[in-house]
Length: 158
Image (tube, rainbow, N blue to C red; front, top):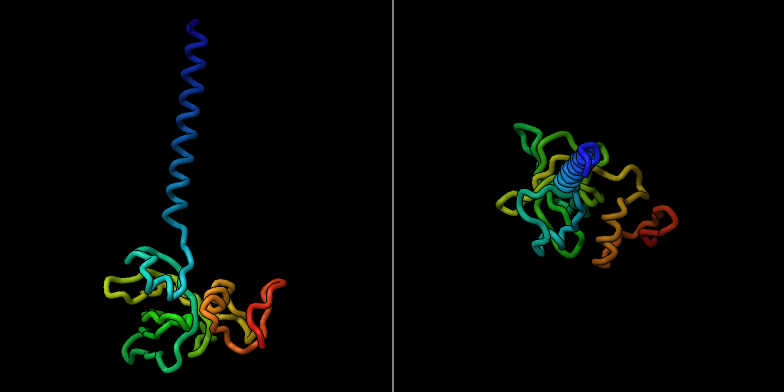
């Protein structure tokens, strides 16, 4: 092999190695930042490890919301009508947050089994429900009694 061919082969090998390292770093970063959705039934069943970030959705249990008098801490329970999990959140809740409301919360389980939310999202009008929450409630057979559509799919029957 001539020196010029050896130099080209080395250059191509270095370029392939560099691209491989860049792809591996990108895939690793994507895997660490992905946030999956789970229902309260999945959480109680142990599908999520404590400290692992994920989204959970369901209905806020009536009578479960308790607010701290000293700071912005709020505790409530979230259910898909199959299982219920306790949720704690420190911050300002959306204006549309209330008991009996469908929400999606982002955060992680702590060691005591409470979901520590970093963000809480509420539905935007009286007919909308996040698709993940609708699917979880549909699986549990506990859809509320109002009509709503998401795209071409009716997610709640009147």
